[in-house]
Amino acid sequence: MSNRPVSPRSSKENVPPAVANVVNVRKRPSDVENPGALNWGPPQKQSVNHSDIACARTDPLVGHGRHFGRTIRTFCRIHTLITNGLSRTMQLELGRIAEEDLTRVANPFSPTIFSDLAEQRLYSSLLKLSPGLEERLNTGSAQDLHYVADMITKGISSARSDDTKSIKTAIVDWITPSKQVLSPPIQRNVKDNRGFHHPRTGELLCPVNFDWKDEKVRRDLASGHLVPSGDVWPRFLYRYFEYDPKDPWNGLLRSSLLVMAYKHIFTSPSSVHGGASKATRSSNARIHGMTSVTVASLAYVATQVRFALSDSPSFCRTDLITDSEYFYNLVVDLLEDENERTEVGDLLQWWNQTTDFRQIFPAQINHSRSVHGDSVIAKIRERRRLIDEGLWVAPQSKNGTASSSSSTGGA
Image 1 (tube, rainbow, N blue to C red):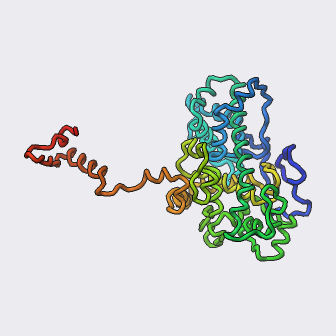
Image 2: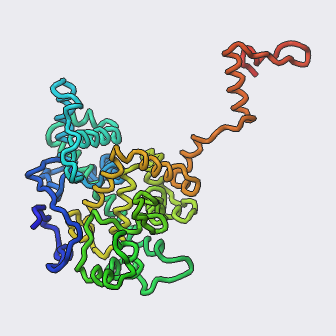
Image 3: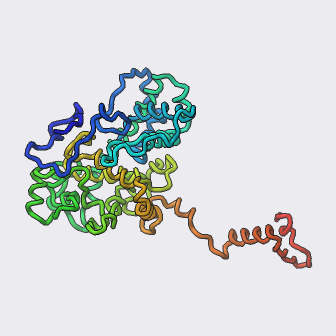
């Protein structure tokens, strides 16, 4: 029996059948055993009474929370993160502890137990994302801290909810083969016939170590006799939805489905198929100055797609069926593993620089383009280099004198 606490919000639909064989499910540590901002379990609610509800709805912290959840950490207890971060920062500044003293690996066998160093880095990322937040936390009261945490948490939750709703509808088009129709059809706003109950979503969700063509596998997955846990990854994560057991990195997180979902969330729905966005508001990426694909944003998009393909009606972090939080943490853990630095670097380069997918952040690509050798800017730079090295020979004007711009730079 698992010792993971169950949220009071969990519905009967989120409880696996008694006869289900949950594939590779691991026990998760309880919050009592492992207190921290990134541990398992439902978020703790703070009983704070805010008098200005209208202000809360428009507080910039909500927007910062939305971007934090999408690109830095979507499953996180912000109040605990801030409290621990403030305490550690003070101890570091006073010299009571050094960064080397922070635990780097709390449990090498479980990515659900995070190190002090990882938590502190998340805290630093939060401060960078929200200008003025550090001063606000250092000078504010305990009630101010609760308010900040509530607003950021609200942003994280609202962004995740908005993306879940929009992708649930859009993904029907993405998984429909060109010039074909799905049989049976999939309703856009109802998920009853998704997951392993439909041949298309079932094939995409099928664990890579299972054979979807095997009738018994399909039957066991559809009946709930087999329930893949978060560490059994689905086929849709791979390019062309094909998994190479001899090289599990080959094509991982490079599928066209992930690319479409990424564009949908971070640029605009109209950019999914290469069209220009006609939205009157800036994209989520542009609003926050996002210029490249990040590790956590990839994990976030993969988690959203995985949930959209499933038949689960609501996104619940304690849901044992979709196991979304565990899946998300495992993807982040892999992509942040120092031992996988080369492969992760290749993956991010593929997302950020590959010609076929430049349109995710097209403006940023131009900054790294080479300048033509015969361009005006190249000629000016070469002229400056020669002047600095004392090798510049000023061109002669028509009357035989040196050009005025050669020495003064004037027109």
